[in-house]
Length: 163
Image (tube, rainbow, N blue to C red; front, side, top):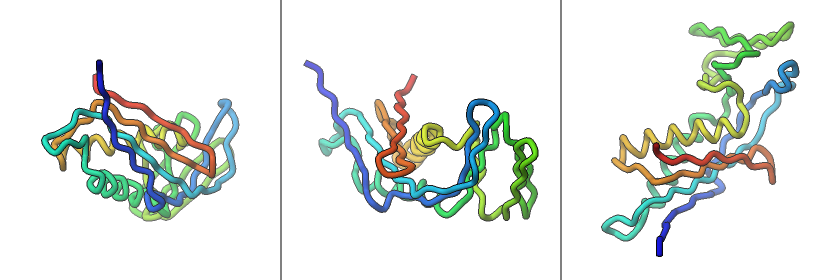
């Protein structure tokens, strides 16, 4: 018999409000808009000496920190093949074909993503969480499921396991 243990956190304060737009079908770019995103995360792993996978409080704190970094920002994909991104100390300028947007640098978060879809945001948050868990807690789960809800009832998820 094999057993699997996990902990899951989905709190009403693990949220972020952010602006974005995505490209799709190779030639379409959405209008600038925003979402009130919610994040949920499940970690799996063996039980430790205290008989739990990972401390709920530490997981909530880590997720809150990650979502706070995205809160009230313009989400900018820096690896997009369709949207060019130019930055300096004061401005971020984005261009898609004949459309140009310019934002104060301090209002943007530059993300190493191809697009700011909920799927890729979930992947980004997962890798940020892995770094936090290793660095601060010396912990590597056996798997992570990160979920990002961009509007009520619309979730995307990213599942990670090492190796």
